[in-house]
Image: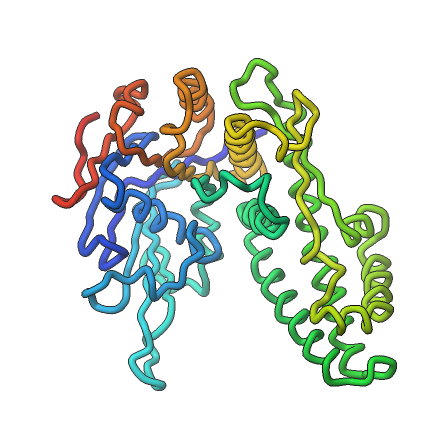
Length: 386
């Protein structure tokens, strides 16, 4: 397999983003450790980087919230990337609508000075994966959290997945409205919407299944029983996941469409469509112990999640040919010394650049001159030491 291209961030520029009014940060190493007190704006830097992945970033926040209070009302983020094929400059900005005729409002994306049609265009130059404390309860939380997590895994290798998921959500809302309005035994508009729902649902389910199966195979083929991060066994659970696992796409669409028609009265009573990708779950097991991840200890779940994200980074590199930018928010602080050293070793074995946050500079002492140590505080952002 050809080694993936490693494009590292060499410069990050922010204008009126979160608490950063005017930031220009140059870095040069594979590891970038952002250190400072809580609330200093470390995670804000990771969020800015995450905007170059499809979607709204690692916090899934509205763009209006990202604009600095007291600033211009909008924000801008740009990166310089250095890779084996030269340097590239990519940027994104957002401006609020000043009035109905304001043509400058909304999000703008640029690549090397040219306007890009959408953030999915950034995938030609950069892939991004991340892990934040919000995911610590992933295995114990509701299935919806795991679906969103899985969709983000898919997005990193298939930038069109987000558009399909959004289109499916819109089609499901249309079906729910029609269930309230039409005769359920003879509704031409309902038939048409259910055809659209079926096509989109099968496309979403197939994309999820392909990524989950690829990730599961990669984990099994590269698992290390001595690793401080146990390997995970993953699979999808749901009626439509069973359909696409057995039937070709066209047949799966026909069968799911028949299910939608059969369930009209039930779904109208429930106020929502009960069967489909929106009801699927990502089932994760602790591989070495062969137990559900949710029943493992808190420390084991954290280690399992880290192992899963690291495996996903390897999958992204293998499938896209681009070594991903890895963003880790407050990960090292919650690991014992053995697992922290194991994390740095595992990250060192990956080809992509890694940005991490932590309150204590000592957490990153083992990285030595492999890392740019960046101090983030009220006085600004600066390189503290190699």
